[in-house]
Image (cartoon, rainbow, N blue to C red; front, side, top):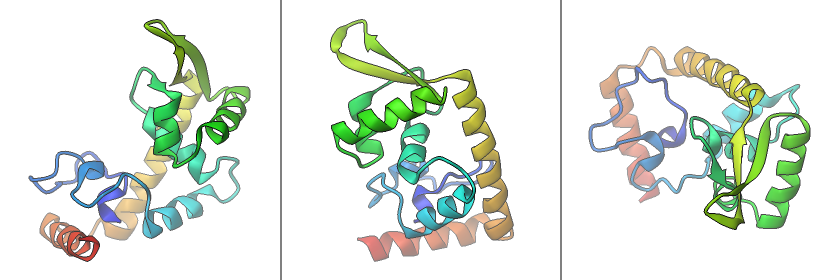
Length: 152
């Protein structure tokens, strides 16, 4: 779904939509087109689409509760724990207890994780421009409107 893709900052998003992931009808989960785009980007990489969804939920934030990452990655709590173990072993994330609630585990990107996400974002923006860069803001707005109607 176009409304769920990671859009370049200079893209003119429809005025009634504060952020691509907040588009009406968008449940925050990646849809077929986004999965295919990310899978193409993943070839030869060691991160799963679930790991990437969790990492994008972390991107640009100081720390996010593990439960929120589980929802963002569409995983159950047991699965997110194993996934976070793997990401921590690879130096991509770090975990620590919430100072206000010790029951909550906060997760944040390491410097290596931030670099990884910046590199991924740059490649996805290049793909975005390659495939949709010749469309005008009006054409993109029209496409988003059609997708919203289909999903309604």
